Amino acid sequence: MSAASAPVARRASTRFFRSELMLIFGRRRNWVGLAILAAVPVIIAVAVKIDSPEGPSGGDFFSSITSNGLFVALAALFVELPLFLPLAVATIAGDAVAGEANQGTLRYLLAVPVTRIRLLSVKFGALVVFCAVATLVVAMTGVIVGLVLFGGGKMTLLSGTQIGFWGGVGRLLLICGYITVCLTALAAVGLFCSTLTEQPIGAGIAVLMLTIVSAICDGIPQLSAIGPYLPTHYWYAFGDLLRDPLTMTSVGPGLVSAAIYTAVFTTAAWARFSTKDVTS
Image (tube, rainbow, N blue to C red; front, side, top):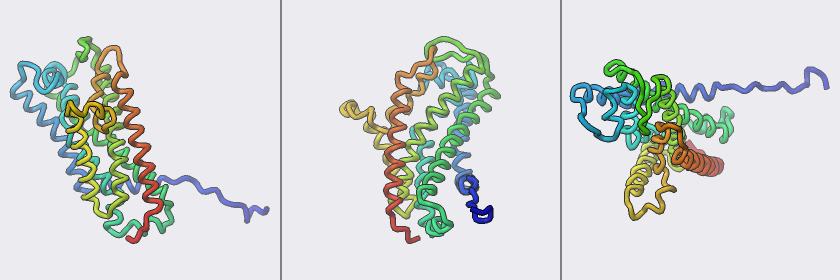
């Protein structure tokens, strides 16, 4: 075979992935959403500074804020995890495929050519990045405003022991990682819903309703048998990461649950999208 006729290896390109990230983080509405997420820890810190709680209020995170500013981040994550963070993820995930179909650009994306599995992979990868960024925006804003208003120092864990400031930062990063994994599972559900419709708002509402119904069912004692199978059941298991020594009693099952939901719904999204008749 001559050199002229030899096949030329194509280098893997991240252009499509970078373009998807620019699509998500380049929209003004998404920046507004992130700004709202960042506003919550500021509100919490200012409120506690003005009127410091005399006892536990809303969990140990709130009553510990005045002793260490890192607890502002933990309190903000605690408050935003039931609704605000899922709402942000549901909005972006619901727009992943349905938004392209609604704007009439999905057919042109597939004609580039881009295989359907690559399109879904890029969309899901960008959703994972958004889950991480949204979580870190809440945490880092909480850390900054917390340190400014209350300072740092040693952190008292839920088990009663104390660790150094940087040890506390490490625990906070572990919690952010765990929450990101949980939100990634929700993003997988959203990606699947996004392949079922051409209306991104409908897909986002479906994911948000699933989150709310799951949380309600998880709080009903008579339905405790199905609790471990609900997508939101282990979301607050990150308390395990604030104990000394670290324990995986609830975090371990939470990671397994998130992995199962992610695998099932990304597979379902692929199965649906690979056979979908794309007309727009």
